[in-house]
Amino acid sequence: MLCLLGAALAQDYSWSGGPGRVDPVDICLIDKSSCGCCLMRRVMSRMEMMFNRTHAELQDHLQKSQNAILHRLTSRSAFSAAFSDTPICVGPYRQDVTIRYRHIFVNLNDRYNNSTGVFTAPRSGVYNLALTAYNDAGAGGRLAICIRLSINGVQQASLMESNLHDREDSTSVNLAVSLLAGDRVSVTLIAGCYLCDDSRHRNIFSGFLLFD
Ligand SMILES: *[C@@H]1O[C@H](CO)[C@@H](O)[C@H](O)[C@H]1NC(C)=O
Ligand SMILES: *[C@@H]1O[C@H](CO)[C@@H](O)[C@H](O)[C@H]1NC(C)=O
Ligand SMILES: *[C@@H]1O[C@H](CO)[C@@H](O)[C@H](O)[C@H]1NC(C)=O
Image (tube, rainbow, N blue to C red; front, side, top):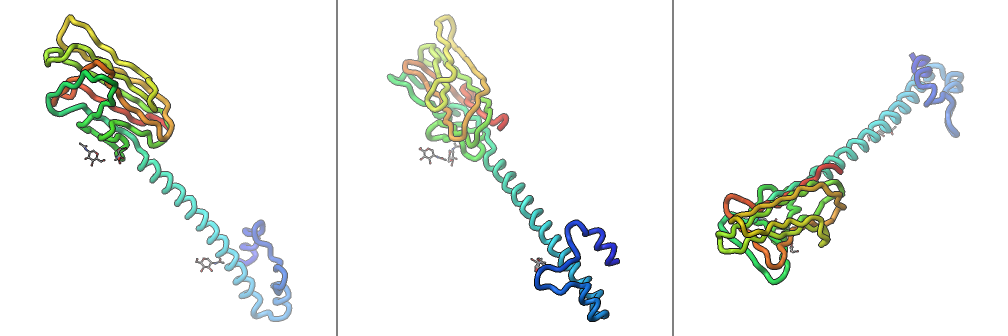
């Protein structure tokens, strides 16, 4: 059996002892009764080292996989919010204002800040962003929707709907963009324009991570 083990482990484990060790062959010459036992102990010790090393490597792989899964879970990203739950029209303002969408449908890991109206990308990747806007001239305002979707303050898409032939207008945009971790996405109501909403949620701002 020792011969078989020796053959199986020959590549990793040589039979010759290191410096300071008594070569098993010498022991076999000196004390025949200890010979087999000594060889067996040496093989077992080497096998234990091998198993320990394999175990440590597996442990390391497991830890890395668990960290990767945890990172994915904590940086999952999707939000969707509507402007209001109660009937309201806002505008016109003298200057551009960031729209704060207050009715939250979903907001994973709180990446959409409902008090500033800014979504901060938790990780780099391709995101889907969607925006709808609505205005009702019958509610007292002029019929003028004009809002802007920006990344880090730079306009990416502009929604504009303004005419005098009907009472209500609605407009929308959907785009896929490449964001870097930390990029800030927001929606601005342009000076002089209006938005109206109620419990039917006609103004919705959404975003989610497609791929990273
Ligand atoms: C193998 O690991 C055990 C537990 O950590 C340890 O007690 C033992 O000394 C190790 N054996 C070798 C040969 O490294
Ligand atoms: C939202 O933004 C405000 C102002 O920057 C900040 O004080 C607050 O901590 C943010 N909330 C979250 C949940 O990050
Ligand atoms: C707004 O965000 C805060 C902090 O993340 C949270 O506690 C609160 O419930 C949110 N409000 C709504 C209406 O979702």
